[in-house]
Image (cartoon, rainbow, N blue to C red; front, side):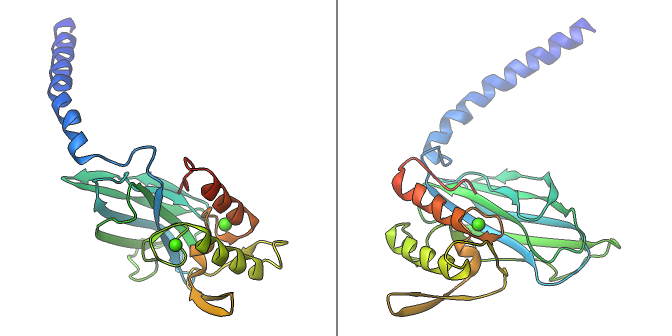
Amino acid sequence: MKNTIKKIAASISAAVLCALPVVNSLTANAYAGPDARYTFRKNYACSSNYHIKDVVFSWSINSNGTSAPQANAIASGTFINGNSGAQNRHIGAGTYSPKNNNIVGGLFSQSFYSTTPNFTEYSNTIYTYNTSGNLVSGAVSASPTFLVGDLNLDKAINEDDFQILYSGIRSKTNNFTTSYKFSYFGIMNVVVGNVGHNYSPYAFDINDDGYLSQADVNMFLQYLSNPTYRFAK
Ligand SMILES: [Ca+2]
Ligand SMILES: [Ca+2]
């Protein structure tokens, strides 16, 4: 018995020694560190009641300059993490099970940090199973991946975006007195100056809770004023 433990301990030591050069080599192909301030997000939602039991998802992105995608619940539910990796890739994967099987709307999101406002997406797959155990194609769809806070799509997050965010949320919340539950499949027109543009409402949901509210404006202001602050998801 003791010999077996010694052998295991020896093999672990050997494995650790072998692993060290790999860790060092990561400096040439580094993941996003704590100073990476660009947060990318993808939302998963369903447009009507599909009696969802499980959503099995996978998202593959480049790993150089990014962090591994993390899943975040929008509607109450549980996750089984299935993250993995391949050479030069992060694969954020798992299974989401909503608490309410009759859920309609936003289910969950995935997000990652990046050192630059660019990334490469390799694949995104979704398999949805209903409470009868059947695969339901098209029940859950994923939004395009977007840079959180970049409403005018110029790959920078600044005062120009804040003007759009402020105007859009103010108009939907009766001057910030209510919270607005938006549709993930909707469009909202926001006027800044005298020019109106159409946007996806989820782009205004900075804190990723399924509502547009003062909290989203506050979080954006924190990003603008604090150079070490980043959107957590
Ligand atoms: Ca922008
Ligand atoms: Ca929000």
